Amino acid sequence: MKLIMAVVQDQDSNRLMNALVENNFRATKLATTGGFLKSGNTTFMIGTEDIRVEKALEVIRESCKSREQLMAPVSPMGGNADSYIPYPVEVSVGGATVFVLPIEQFHQF
View 1: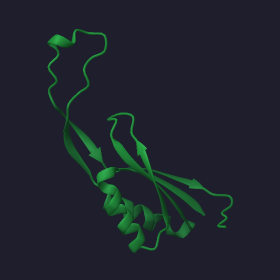
View 2: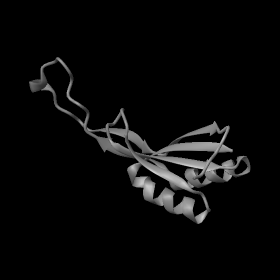
View 3: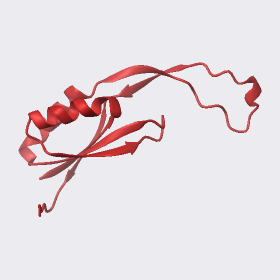
View 4: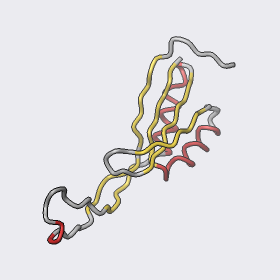
């Protein structure tokens, strides 16, 4: 048995949840916050048999696409903020960060 933890952007979370349900995966959905862009994301915890891991990864890959987005940079710390003009920068967002962990035991009460 494996535990799949997938961290996805909030924009992709509903699409992923629907795809997981369509493919008979059970998931626990947690609201989380990313550190880099300080934007909301969602972490999915998916328990599945070893033989279904590749199918789960395929569902995640198809549901969570990365894309480019313009973001306003944070003002510099300790510098003169009066002369700081924030120009938007293009960053890659979306996609998924996925961890696959072995599970020794699974209980459902």
